[in-house]
Image (cartoon, rainbow, N blue to C red; front, side, top):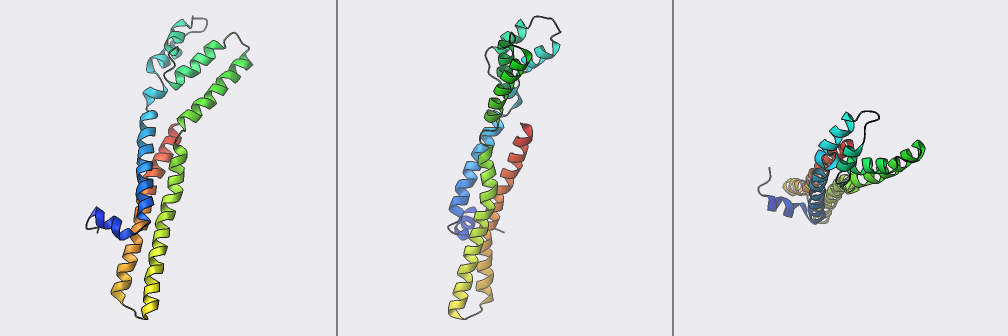
Length: 183
């Protein structure tokens, strides 16, 4: 199919450059979000167990000590809740909801880059294809000939950018969908 990676990118033309850059950025964000959204970074298991074993009326000091460092999303939410215990229920709920919105923003950081990649990569591939086809037909129109080999080679070269655009977009769609559902 493709003789070498280098020839694949050189045959694709100028639009392969932004596709390669977009691919690098996308892979970087996929890896970063994968590391940031690991369960241990969002929910401290010992804090989770302490919360669910806590009985009504029992002291929450163990939960408070586990949440104090605030290294995970759950710990920060629990800490806010415990800090606002003396407040009315409605005020406490409002404080926790405000912190939860901050945490959601933190968890969703970078997903916009994947959304943009999902939209731009196929369009860049299509743009490269159209650009290649325009070049082919302008050359044929200028010479007045109909060399089938020239047409076939030109169309295959034009489609390289479409393939590259889809190769960049598909993993980005998968990662974006996975990370969005994980939040």
